[in-house]
Image 1 (tube, rainbow, N blue to C red):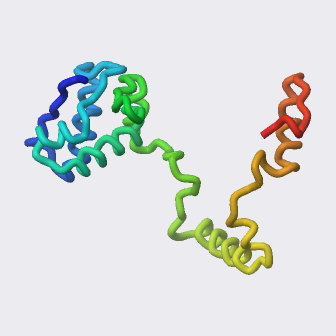
Image 2: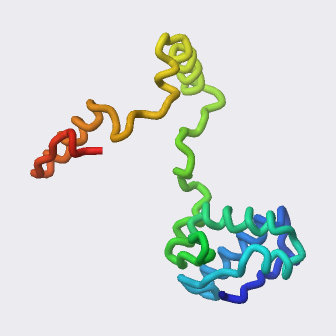
Length: 161
């Protein structure tokens, strides 16, 4: 385990974000190398005088930024500076959630409102809210097989997920 204790005294804002920001800076500066195992949540919380939940939230934020990876039973590890630099872009797109950003005004907001109202009024709306069948829908698998065929390979729709 790497003995890493960030200095948080001059950092404004929530403690979890200060820990995640310090982690980012230390990875980019090379003070934390790729593959370094970070302290346990409980150990770091004790050293910083914060709750275990604060450290957990900080590690989750750092993982969301692409700085860390965790393995159950093994610990939390630094991913590396190249990943950290790429994750530092605040204008990046967060693909952790499966929904688009919601427009709050203008033509896109109007279209979204009309579309959602139309969908809500459909008789089969419950089918849209459930999970798809295992392996995907037949017409999706057929489209996948056709796409694979464009590369010169042969694939049967029954073999595509």
